[in-house]
Each structure stands twice: as C-alpha cells, then as structure tokens.
Image (cartoon, rainbow, N blue to C red):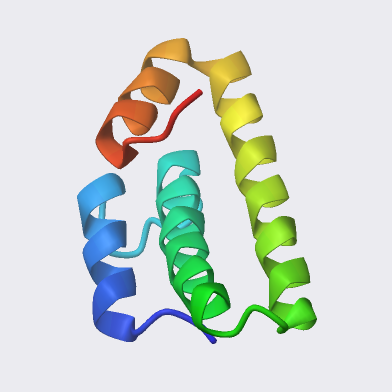
Length: 89
C-alpha cells in the first residue's frame, strides 16, 4: 500500500529542492510521515492486521533514524521539518 503518484510528487516538490530530489532527509521524513498516517487509518479500521502493524512500526523506526541523523547534521533543518510536519519531539 504505497502513496499515489500525485501525493508523492506534491511532497517531493514541497520539501525537496527539485521534483526529483527524493534523497533529501526532509523529503524522506515527509514521505514516511504520510505513509504512517495512511497506515494508522488502515489499522483503525482493521485492528487485527498484524502484518500492517509491523510495517507501521518499521516505518516509525526509519523515520526516527532519519530524524536523528538530521538532528545530528543540521539542527535548524531538523527543527524546520518538525514544525512543518507538526511532529512532536
């Protein structure tokens, strides 16, 4: 269950430098956050779906690792991403 192409390109252009800039940490965090939100909605409707729950937990871990990297490298970009995505940390 991935993101629709329109949503993905919208996120990439908003957080990246160009339309093909998918490697930037801010873009990765934004894409992970969108997928996490989608999976959370899915799990509210299907609470016994353990495989999707595992995928959700893995995505949360990936996002956390990328955020820790961003915090270590550039604290200002880290704070901006948290503010833009309304993440608590």
